[in-house]
Image (cartoon, rainbow, N blue to C red; front, side):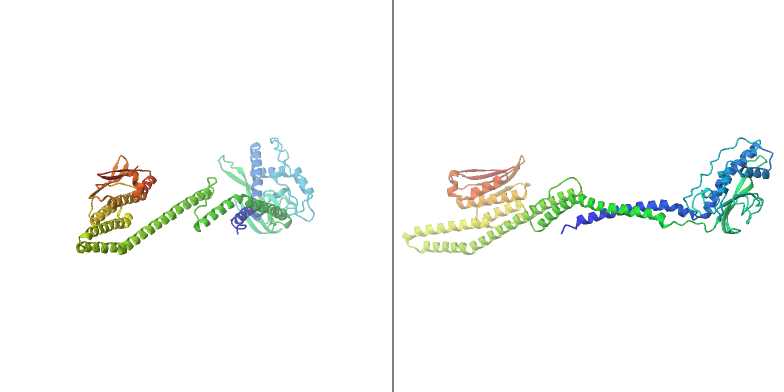
Length: 526
């Protein structure tokens, strides 16, 4: 039942989270790997970046030449810049590395070391092109501003003047020096373009070469362009061989991580599932009516809070059920007392009343010798009826729960006074007692008044309930014949003993005083 329940679900969640983490890592790696391919598909952006890089270097060279040789015209400055790139070592190496049958770009100014010009400052060292790699097959254009020094890339560049005449070219077989481009320069700011040239469908970009304005203002004038072009279909395509290592690494990581996640999930949830099983066992027992089992509380987490709550719930349910049972037992006792009282009233009381009538008739009709016995019989019947009435009052249920302690005591005193003709005086103060103590006080007064009526033949009974110094005092006094307290067990049965037990259970004390002038029963509850 439990083997693949909560524990299996939590272990599966660990595996799912682990696998998701692996897939996310794979996605990030794939994105990092494939973003350059995605960027490379934007051929115009690649050409623009390449042209901008070359233009930056040429602009620095123009600024240097125009500063060291201020008398040159813009056309002469452009020619001097072109002369600095011609016959360079990088350009010669690039020509020697040309692949037969493929247009191979020459080095542009961004990658050359210009030759010295008379009157110029010593030339600046520019990084040379690294030697070619023979293990890489020729490929079409890839992303980044790198294609001019990679073997096998079909990109070419040229330096042209404002009219479009070629001043220097990386592919002189296609655009010779002195010739013109197939497209016209777009304007002073340059820009991209797409169209057909002598090499076929082509994408190109113009980037202006700038010189400081000769009038001394802060502006710049264009003296030429860097022109970069490539075939329009020069787009990268990742191959299966390039993507296979990435996919294989991800599959291997997933194959290793899933069993680890499964084992970790099973081990980490073992203690939690056992605690949940104990909780389920206790709740099942409580649902079946057994409130004794308790859950051992461990730790201070959410499950321990639940464990404490289940124990508290079991305690309260057990107390509530026990209270209901006690109430049911009390109601059963009250019902039984009422039934017995009705039976006594309907049978024995009627018989005693008939006996008293017969004794009275016999007393009036009997001759002198039998009159004394008839009177004794009449007195005995009257005494038996009186005791029976007192017993019925003791058995009579009093609605303590509905009326409260003081009204119940007043009703009890009034019943004895009305039915037995005994004056019962009640002096009752408002007190606060728990339900168990109220019930004990009521039964104590009922027992004490009943004993006085049955055994002491009093003419007056006093019932007092007071609260002094935090203690509740209950006293019942009568002016009857009294009795010897030392002989109480043999004369009065279990009445006084039961009263003493009730008071002792509540932590109180019962005192008894009796003499010829009467009896006083006092209970003190603290």
